[in-house]
Amino acid sequence: MMMDSFLVLSATKDPTAVERANLLNMAKLSIKGLIESALSFGRTLDSDYPPLQQFFVVMEHCLKHGLKVRKSFLSYNKTIWGPLELVEKLYPEAEEIGASVRDLPGLKTPLGRARAWLRLALMQKKMADYLRCLIIQRDLLSEFYEYHALMMEEEGAVIVGLLVGLNVIDANLCVKGEDLDSQVGVIDFSMYLKNEEDIGNKERNVQIAAILDQKNYVEELNRQLNTVSSLHSRVDSLEKSNTKLIEELAIAKNNIIKLQEENHQLRSENKLILMKTQQNLEVTKVDVETELQTYKHSRQGLDEMYNEARRQLRDESQLRQDVENELAVQVSMKHEIELAMKLLEKDIHEKQDTLIGLRQQLEEVKSINIEMYQKLQSSEDGLKEKNEIIARLEEKTNKITVAMRQLEQRLQQAEKAQMEAEDEDKKYLQECQSKSDSLQKQISQKEKQLVQLETDLKIEKEWRQTLQEDLQKEKDALSHLRNETQQIISLKKEFLNIQDENQQLKKVHHEQEQALQELGSKLSESKLKIEDIKEANKALQGLVWLKDKEATHCKLCEKEFSLSKRKHHCRNCGEIFCNACSDNELPLPSSPKPVRVCDSCHALLIQRCSSNLP
Image (cartoon, rainbow, N blue to C red; front, side, top):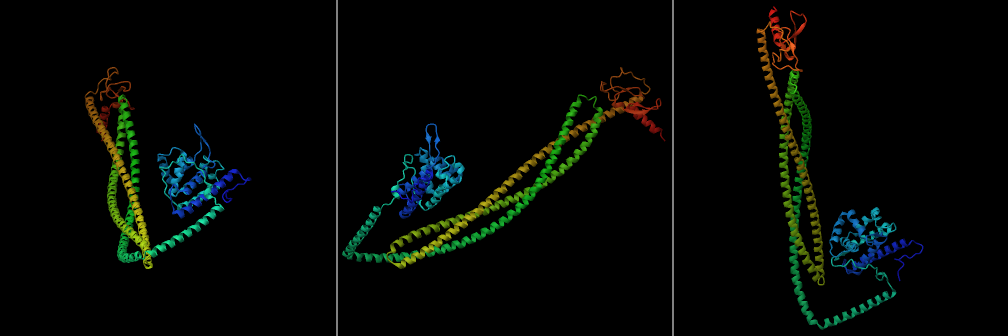
């Protein structure tokens, strides 16, 4: 017969709801029976334990309830491995279980992998956590389960809550050698059913066992009465062993006292080291904060200077483009040299103005470069100081790590000594429990002292963990400072590139100055030629008005006439000149209006006028 307490058989309810209720009751019974039997059995369970096997079968049925059927290429597929694989995405710690299940060589089916996953999750004591992540994400579960499935309803949450109690159990399951693919998952209800005959048989068995125990006790008493002489010898041996035990206990007491003294010394040393490390950490924190503030200020100044240098570079690049455009214009003007003589003079004046501006800008750039160089030197000094501070911090951290290692070695030695002392105490306790109550009291006191020592060691381990976290924080700060130094080095490289571009601009400026000097030298030569022509004109005054056909070159500059370079008569000497050499106008005695005159006649007439003046 099935009990009404764990099966619900009602015709009025929905059959899926009845299935969910039956599975929930079966899960309650299997989990409860497993916990009770494990506590009575000794908490560590193997894979051959029947209640544990039935628990996995019940869990498999719960996970299969309402599972959607997926059509594959050859057949229909309905396994619980799909939703269990979702746990890896939702809970990162479950990736180890998934990887280990996939690496198992004997598993060939998804159902076998799911069974291995359930066993590994129980051994990790995290089955409840993993399934809770699945139940929360119902949108993802709807891809695998129907809307009326147990995992989609409240019964699934109740089962997950019941699974938390399994954290009390320690399971030692061998998954490699077990054939999980071909197992048949059938629930054995006989384990959870109780009959009246079974109860009566159990009571009879208990009574028979008590009678047999009494009989054995009486037989043992008779044997002991027949062996009195052997008991005397045993008493003597026990007395001797008692004396030996007393001596060994005295030795153990002395060892415990020595261990306590060593523990006190270790605690005092630990306190001193902690105080020193805290002081050093506070000093280093203050230094690092001040250095960070100074570094931030210097970095802001460097950023401002960098932005200004960029602006100046943009201006210089624009000027460079302008200069390149002018050079292109000059190249195009070479083909039309005859039209560009007047424009050359104007360009010379403009270039002189631009040269003055460029010289001023170069002086400003030089001053800015000097300032940038000074600031770079100051920043390099700051970097050197920070590197020294980082080296000091690394030395301090190395010292702290050495001290921590020494402490760990001492703690390991103390733990080994404690383990040895515990083993000896357990042996002595097992031998002396039946002999003397006084020894039991002393051993209980020693156990209390050992518990205190263990708590002290735990506290020291926590202090060590906090120190390690502080060291990690300092290492992070050092890495941040190193990154900032690398950024400063990159800024240095950019500044050097800017200096190189500035030097290239200086070279271009120097070449332009040389070109202007060559133009000036050519102009001076042309002026000398004009003066020579003037002197020749003085000697040739009174010549006849030349015809246009006879003149092919200008008298002063000796350049050939063309369509762009026209001919012009001087109204004073009658010779033919170009426009550049005869662009002067003066009133002559023959004409009161100002008339075109060549440069030489213009200079002579001006000298005469100045000499005639009083």
